[in-house]
Image (cartoon, rainbow over all chains, first blue to last red; front, side):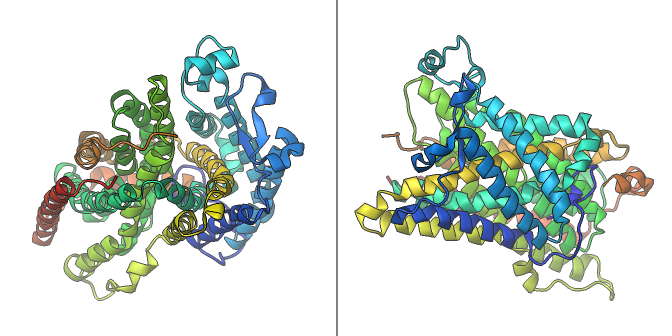
Length: 494
Length: 55
């Protein structure tokens, strides 16, 4: 997708045509990080210098390299090394995407430091400490109990402040505001992390497939049909507006709106406007639903994870909501002396989302076929072609599947002396995943200018979205998640 | 995007658009989609009930 479509800020500048798609680029970046992490299996620590942030009450506690092999770097050294490495790699990526590298470099510098500073701030003990023992350890008398990963909210809020109060600055850093690229890289890395988590309980992991199929049925056959009907019948939208709008609300936000808009040969402005709406509502969901899940679904962790995957739109917001939900729910259970293994709630949310993504191309073809053969039958209109299924397939999912398969093989198919080191090796790559999540949250915030909601004429689109999302999609998503996941809990941490 | 919003055409279009009646093919699409979707969900729920997640 193009970030151009998301808000009032203009699209990232392009110096020349892209040499590679964002999806394939995410596969290359994610796989590279994952493979570099695996070098630890042969005792070569290539990425242990990446910075890790812990809950802190004194700033000296906050930062450290991910691996003790790089302890001499210190926290600040690790942070600078991480910034330098990401700047080089992502500048090359920007060049491959046809962006102006100099502009990207300057913009990314601002994006990285602001996003990471807000992440560090969110890890302050008064915000993140979870248990009374933690509070005692950090010497604080109160805490918001947001947990370590709750600090994503801080990155999001920092982005929102810039979008809504510093629009010129938002415009200035637009070249590095690429939430879809960041989250796709993170999802590729996440595949390996989830495989290592799932390897311990493979029977359950495989049964997630069944629930993934249910998610596909729900999103495409139930949600889309109902939202399309609401948009057409109750709000009087044309077919051209209703089909992308229904896709944005019901399937996978931005990428679905763009895919369906293209399939029914809508004007490019239609999915672009829908996309901006999707992102704004996704931000609202990220800020609300994880806390709702913590309050009412703390004892049904996987219902909560699946709910995030089904109800929150756009890959970035959905997977990130899964991460926040996981940290909040694990924290609440930890305060009750129940310690679930991390990774399951996030993995469930991501799996549900990936399953939904897989069928975007198929649904786009189905609608494209109906539109070009039965609704807009004009000699000039190009008919839907089967190869569009592949063209619209989100390729980064291939990266997710590769790292998942690789992680599973290394955990289950290698000798014990190798397998025992896999979690640590994948853990280093996973630290990069966290950083890409931070960049995603911040970027989503920067792209969310709420003034767009007040644009004349835009309110009607927002009304369809609000009615469908809060009146139907969220609750049906919760019901289906409950039916398929209630009573199932993650393994207890050893 | 700001350029897009400055163009009032789309806002006017959204505000003043005349309703297009649902075509039979749209009604068929909606009803078949919902029918197949609900039937599949029932089947999957039954499978889920009788084949619990592996330990």
